[in-house]
Image (cartoon, rainbow, N blue to C red; front, side, top):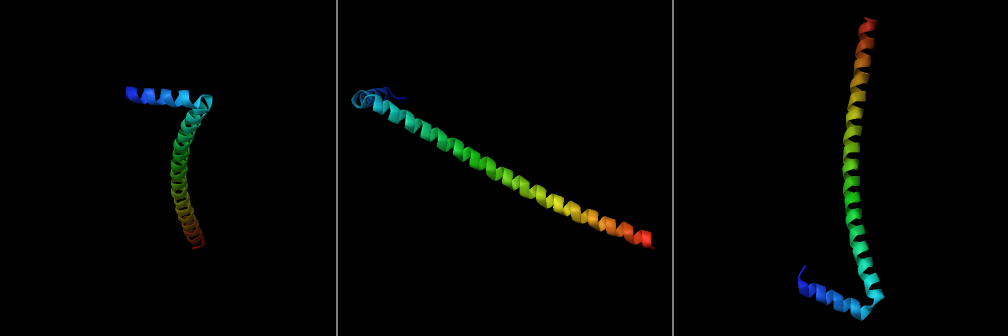
Amino acid sequence: MDPTEYSTLAQFLAASGPYGLVAILAIAYWKLSQKKDRQMRELFDRVVKLSEAQTAAITKMEAALMALKEAISDLRRR
């Protein structure tokens, strides 16, 4: 951080008093919350994609097992 930014921040805090500090902390908290929300949305999207892939795989497996069951039943009848 540039030293002039520190002096600007110090001047802002001196001028605004404790309310300025509260405002700065609120903005910092808001920025962190946005970052966490974005990360949670990305994680949720990945979980949804994995769930969809797993559901498709399970459906295919069920279909294959049902076909195998029918084939075994047909062989037993003969």
